[in-house]
Every structure is written in C-alpha cells, then in structure tokens.
Length: 283
Image (cartoon, rainbow, N blue to C red; front, side, top):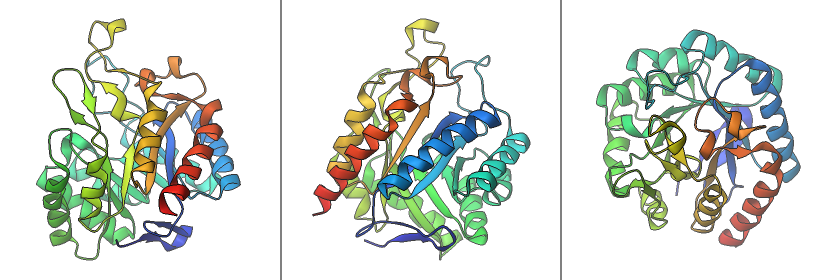
C-alpha cells in the first residue's frame, strides 16, 4: 500500500508508519479554544511519538436546523486556522463544501477534506483535487454513508484524472443502517486500502444518530459518545492507518455535535491505547 507523506511536516501515513492522529474541534468556536485544544493534543501526540494534525471546521454546512451553529465562515475561519497553524506549528485539516472554496482552503489546510455527503459531487472533487495538488497538500475524502467501500474507486479515479499526482487518504465514517442510525463494517477498511490508499477512521461521526437528538426533538443530530473509543479501537485493530477524533473541554457545551464529542481530559488515555493497538496489529 502506498505511503502518503507531507515532507514539510515530516508526516507519513501508511504501512510501516505510526498511527496518525487527526484531532481537534468539531467546529471552530473561538481562537483561544482552538489554540488550547490543539496545544494539548499536540503535546500528547508528541509524548506518544504520533504524527498530529489539528482539525476543525470553519463551517458546518450540513445542519439539521437552519438555527444550528455553523461556525465563523470561510474568511474568518481560515484566518483562525492559519493562526493555529502558525502558533502551534502543526498541519491543519478542514473540510470544504463548494468548488469555489477549494483554492482558499488548500492555501491553508494541509489535509483538505471532502465531507461524506459530498464525495460523489464531481465538480467538488475535481476542484478540490486540482487545488490540493497545486498547493502540495493531501486530499482526505470521507466515504459516504450510502456507498460501498469498493465504490470509492470512482472517487479516486475522478480526483486523479483531474490531478494525476494527487495524494489521497480515504476515511471510514459508518454506513446508514435503517433510520437514525449508522454502523461500521470493519472489513471495509481493508477493502478501501486495496484501492491503494491509506485509510482513517472517523470514530466521532460514526457514532452519530442523524436527526435523532431527543433533546431537540430531532432538530439536531444525536450521538453515542461512549461508543467513540469502541469504534476507534476496533478500527485500529482492523488495520486503520489513522484516527479522526473530536474533543472539547466540556462536550455537553460544544456548539455542534456535542453528543458525539469526547472530553479533552480523556485524550491521553485513549491515544495511548490506540497506539498500542496499532503496533500490535502491525506486528
């Protein structure tokens, strides 16, 4: 399986390399919070010898309600992410939603992420692939909840037709299972790796209950926070090359997807366990 690298950051993901940690906030709330969460996660990963990428969204365009918090937006959000990158000296991952955002996002983000619901949008894939390749970044594509792992080949083909030298990472984040539920097929991780790319697990969004938060009568997405470590550990044991996790100092006060968010004070313990599982799975 090919290894994806970011030479500027001494970053490598894939066979023979440590577990990569893509972690941070679900959505940017303010700069101070982003810096404090990123600083702590960077320190934990440094102690464990794990490559770290700070993640946060500047806009959560796919919300259940028009009244839901979405974030600071493209201009202010990218400025915030650029400040985190400069102050903490870490690579950045963030997602985009429209083809017209690709160049601006790729200028800041090292991992440019395509959301699951948008991974079949040809114009978005092409624009993201070209902008990411031109900026020397990596495209991180989440597998949609409604497609099979092997059908991700079409996404890779589209992206590489647009940018032949593009580096791509796929991300497993669960599949729709009836109404208001997701499940993760751990065998899908290996199936996506057969396409010749590293694969991460988004354990945070894999425990979502779409449109099923009883606190809001279904006006927001619910979640099963206790399941995040279960999904993360199972996926790493199944061969995942990296983990995607969202933390918050006070998850119940998070402005977006709090029910699926982990408490920041549990990050060190979970990442220690995941590192050990990754090493055991690759032994």
